[in-house]
Image 1: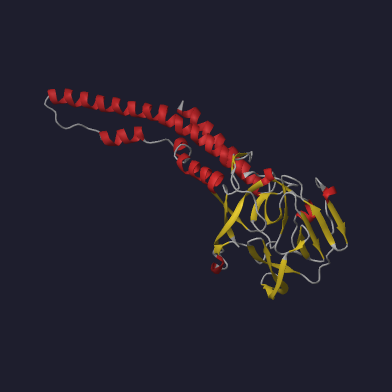
Image 2: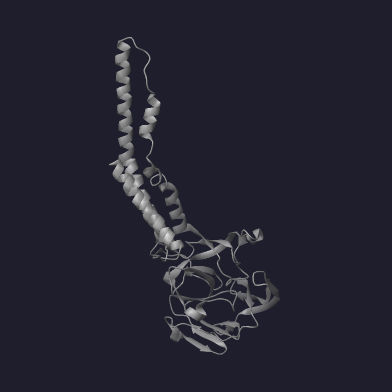
Length: 325
């Protein structure tokens, strides 16, 4: 039995390691939520087996050793022998010790299940990989996302089971990229269901009302080593900064054929879109360097992951730590 479980566990660990390696090398499209769920299930099964089968078996074996040792001491004592060879505690400890295949599975279950629950229902960490949200978030920012702000969802399948707040204009939201749901994107909510969003000549208008846009001093991008025009926008109760590149045209080049594309009108000045029910229009704060809803369309409610609310670390700039505007 022990030999079989050792071999089986080795195969299971090899499968997990192989999947992780193939994901790292880009040979497969990884899904960390699914991987964590499977790790929780597998280690949970080992934990149950340890608690209700393997541990009782080892404890029973240790009791037998103790009984045999007591019987032998009694027999030797009857013969007048008080010194007994062997170390009972050492033998008992060897019998009770978890084998490696339980230590690497059942032993890890409490940690894995806590991580799984925290990441699935409370908070999830993300790393900002690109400059599409500059100046609000910089490349390398490590952020926390509130997973329950927009409702509680089942892990892996992302189905909402408990409703909560609806996304509001100005929220910084993480969502599953509609053309490739295995990827997580982060942008700002610009349009909610029913809104008519117009971005013409680099000016944002929502339902016919121009969004307040106040000029600020130019922003210096340390990565690109160049300056960009910086503005302060106010949408509802949210105030944030955006960038514009004067060298980029207002025309939206390369928009794909996305669902509800008929709701959008493209021109040399930009785009006007009517947001369908159950969907959201997202834009990056780095307006001329962001692949967002102007190019690939609307974000379905089912793709929502959570609300970004805190930068907890940037190893290149500790001053970045703080709340997300």
